[in-house]
Amino acid sequence: MNVGDRITVTVGGIAHGGHCVARHDGRVIFLRYAIPGEEVVAEITEVTSKFARGNAIEIIKAAPERVSPPCELAKPGGCGGCDFQHIEISAQRKLKSAIIKEQFSRVAKKDVEVTVIGVAPLTGLGWRTRMDFTVNPDRKLALYGARSHNLIPVAKCLIADERMNLDSINQMNLPVGAKVEVAISGSGKQSVAIEGIENFDLIEESVLENKFSVSPTSFWQSHIQSPAVLTKSILADLQIKAGDHVFDLYGGVGLFTAALATEVTQTGRVTLIEFDAGAVTDARRNFAENQIVEIVEGKVERSLSKFKRADLILLDPPRSGAGKDVVSAMIKLEPRTIVYVSCDPASLARDTTYLEASGYTLDRLQSYDLFPMTQHIECVARFIKNS
Image 1 (cartoon, rainbow, N blue to C red):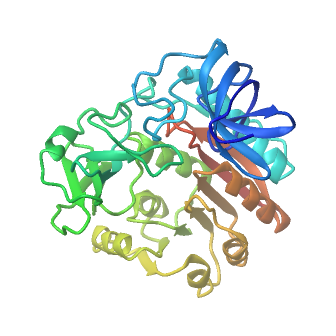
Image 2: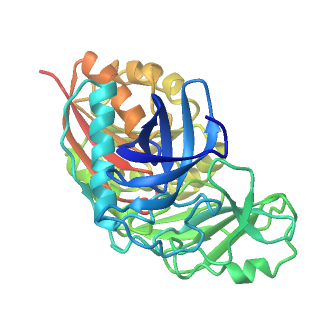
């Protein structure tokens, strides 16, 4: 098998990473733009000693869930931003549920049932309030193709918030190769941060009556509904009591800390731990007048070692997950409940094995479709300390 070969295959199940699995002459092929059960012509794009990758370029037998992608760039050779535009939106959620189930079965040896809950806008379009671009040689905004260094110019992104005006940015004399971060605030104000140009305004956000000012380069949940949806889910799972000491790990600019601080009341305490200096600056500004919030800058596992006890722990780690060292540091504090927000079911399943081996039981697992049209999956897991 060689790059460029075209073969006819029957598509198997969905795999973590936005691909479907097919086989040809005993070799596993990870396919983009396919749906389980289809018969397709696949063009091979990469070959390794163990597997191959390819794109479905012709559909011989289509699945009933197949639709025409709303964006002309959602195709082989196009933009790599969306993985599932060719799949009907409710079917996308079912496939994501299957991915979560498969990852927990394979990694954690645990059977879970979870429904991925749709979040408005239910079309799966117009939801993204944060976008990262690279400036192409024509000085225009572009996105990389899937598993490629090719820059694809993007005049309009259909999953972006409709208020995001890329035309206005493309009129600027953008520096070739620079990263450009575009954000839309809850009020609809557009902010543009261009790499190498330190001239930007803070973004003002409001979530469940809590107000934040955020640097354009600091992390903020990208789905327009995500801050509120996740905050409500977390509060329901934590079951905070007045006077609790709650830890917000990987707390960023303090999105969740604000809600936690309200729940613990003036008799409680919230400790936000974050390693990114820019986010810490934002958090300190956001909680400058809040006496019950303490902000710790540093790596989570090292920072936790300075504390003796915790009533509750919330963590929202990067895609790589918390890992064994962080889990070990958390359980030494003996919290009664740990709520884990995850954007990757594989690392969540791995960390579940660490937590359950350390005396905590996965009590509830929820998932929200906060990255529609893409392979990404958001989960909220609750772990209860065994009695």
